[in-house]
Length: 329
Image 1 (tube, rainbow, N blue to C red):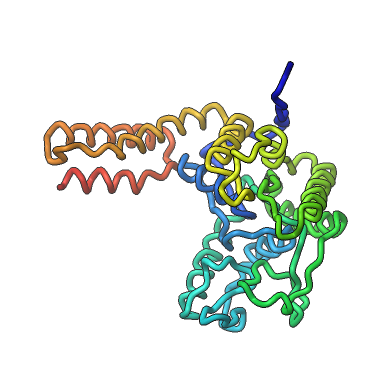
Image 2 (tube, rainbow, N blue to C red):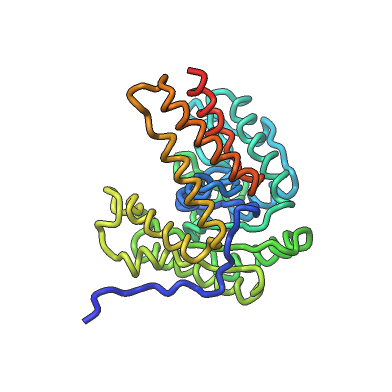
């Protein structure tokens, strides 16, 4: 008897290398994976707008990045003593409008500079439900806890998502023909929508992505993060205390399957050596001023030099600074 249902990973998924540039946008699940990619020394820009949940907000963010948009005071609104952007996560909000704008525009400028050089976009859809501002009629990325009366709530259709992304991808590929897009659907359940409405929402996202794979077979791919949690792990012990978000164990498991499916052999070796350096720097001896420990740090610097000599695009600046600071102590 088999008590385990395995999710088959697509065989055609592209294999990422450290030489390539990536940008991740979408739900907090994109942040989980993006943070791990950054820690593994991949060149990533992770959620330059903060967490985004619905497909239209993600596509709007990409269009703004492409256009090199800069935000001004007229793009913000004051609510509960904070200056907010309807396109950005609350982590950008601040009591000082200049601080909010500086934070937004710094991230936007970097993303705009990066996007022509991108090899991969990793997009994570969270929900097909959207909130439209009653004042502007536009879909907002974040309601910032304003009253529900300020918005009209509706669910996107498959056709609406496909039409929007067909236009977006045509624009992106015209300037960057080699760009590849890896979609995921967030396994986070939006229980406030109701379980049936959440199921319809996830189904809408999955159908839209499948249509986009058919329209752009050489450029659009799907990694089954949603199915790994819902169908393979399939137990409340793999959720956090809120029974909505995946637990740390579940995120780590999905990350391991992502590595298995999407990371090249050479990149796996770099990841292992980088992790060894990270773990070595976590070691704090009883006598940090000893010659033995200084030799230990010098060996770490030599390992970093060797890796950078072979792969000059790897960023070990923080690790170098840590070593040099401890050597001078």
